[in-house]
Image (cartoon, rainbow, N blue to C red):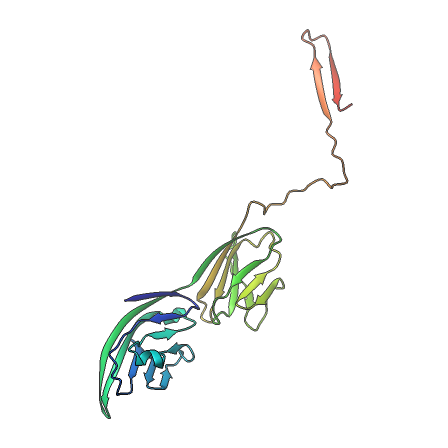
Length: 232
């Protein structure tokens, strides 16, 4: 089966097993290169990089549900997973394949249309976010606007789970990309101007605009012309 998730969410890789109620249930979840999580009765053993993120809850396992719960999903979590039921005693163990699951992980993509002067929110989606970079619509260069625990643009504010750009102005149009520590995109926001983005100059309210219309009139005979001005 195939399970698809986006960065930062919690996903469940399905698994069912016939568990002997008279024995201690022992389940393993593995990728092709590493151990993700092992549950042997009340004891749980997460693999390296999965600490605090992976679990097979014991109450569910005792009912035959050996699904793997993976929180704060990362792009690096994508891959092929297999679950096994370990049976036997002492040194005589047998691993029975239960489930094979392909996990696909994608980043978040957003588009924003913000009026000039309004604030724009850039979601982080995950604790993995360490950097925000920006590319203007007319520029090939990427500029770092924020780094976790480091420098940030003076117009950026940090909110729980998001960054907020204060007072959008000309030149802010472009792509805002949240990256992890490997430079991989977790979230991308494309900012485009709306129909009110362009601001036109107007006459001050205390000024009066006077329209002077000059009309040149010639008679058909061509004998003379005169000029009239409106208003008089």
